[in-house]
Length: 217
Image (cartoon, rainbow, N blue to C red; front, top):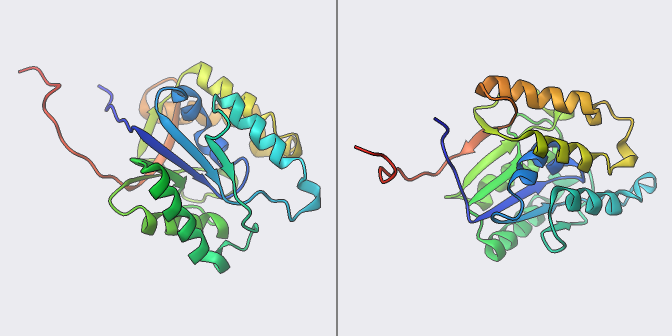
């Protein structure tokens, strides 16, 4: 039997455009329109003149997953400089907490080694005390990631994730954007759950309440 989990308000945090989609795209596509959710990406990468199309690609990707304007937002933190701005990152998270009062936070896995991802996860642990925090995997910078929370997703949701990531023409030649790699990852995570397809997370903090009301005696 599957464990059913839910949240009236979900907050997805990512350091850079594409992070959230790579780690959670199928889940977002699966549940878009069924609950309140917001995606906040901290860096728009606009300090790099070669990445000027990313803002438009990010919006197109989020729309493809089923999100509407107002459900996603780009910040202007400088890429690879997050550790120098930990307090500002924390303050932004506190503002998001107050605005959306999320019940589940999705952020980079604790196994990630990218300095921006590390900072984001550490500050999320501080900002969202008393809240469930799940860590998603971004293949290119995670080492030693092995999921302990697996969420079954549909074939249609995985297809939506692939379509969303195809909006990033800037990264079209990156190996981790390969549809074969992305689909294989969903199949592997599904195999770990003994399901056809799944997305995977590590449990950074789990806050729960047991109820026997759904059990028949």
